[in-house]
Image (cartoon, rainbow, N blue to C red; front, side, top):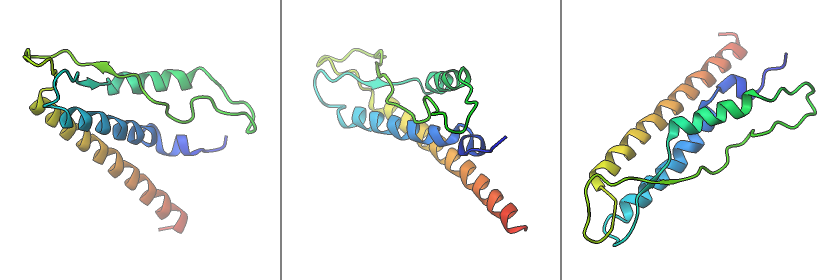
Length: 130
């Protein structure tokens, strides 16, 4: 059985791409915190990963010449966030909540980077025979 990049790095490779997309969405929300009528948007990261795992589990590649389906992440569908407090101008962005979400997303991104870095370091060490 041949080892591929997907099996070496697991979900973290694609998680970085989705975390980056989420950072852009959250940054757009924060940038529009004072824009009248702007509706805050986001996507549920856990459900995206669940869908990604489910979509990859149903297909078996039996030949190395087969093309893998869903091998690269696609864009996610954004949902409008339900506001916690009403705004007179119709804006649904809560700047403090967005900052907290952005910070948590950044921490999760760094965690995936560190995991991948550790994996790469381990593989390099094994190849060198350390």
